[in-house]
Length: 175
Image (tube, rainbow, N blue to C red; front, side, top):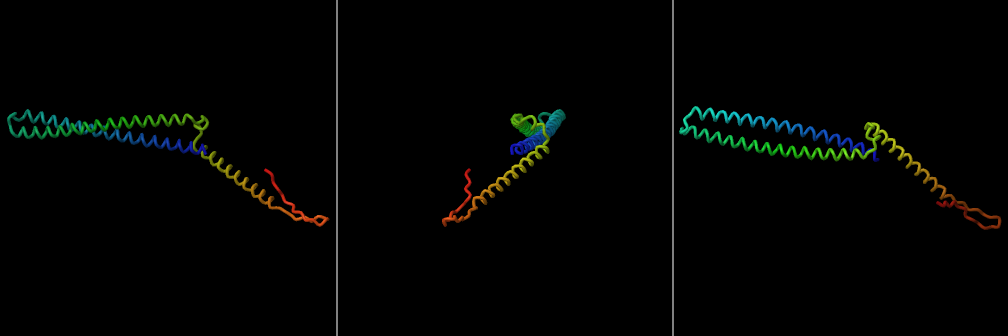
């Protein structure tokens, strides 16, 4: 039964490690792409603002509106960038927690005998099935023996003695 639990635990550990790694890679790629997009847009807006400011007179009313509009967009981009930075921090924290979990699981695996760690999962499954089969056969054997004992206990016979007395003869099993 321990082999089955060990096999299942090892399989679950491997599946969890793969799932977590895949999620982390996907999140990292998404955050990297988002960061690049925001940086590109911010750079484009800053370049546009610089060129727009140089082409118009400082006192022009349209420039003030465009400048205010652009500054609003820049502030929004900075807010998105700060949010992205916060999300990266959370991702790093989550990554650290996953690493800790994997280290704990590795520690649990180390508690298994080397022979069990080296055996393929299929072999462990076969051994488990053989043990379960042996246990089932042993249980059937014990039930058969108990049935025979119960049958023997039920044997009794009345015997009549030459003197005329009748005696009951039975099997008594002392365990």
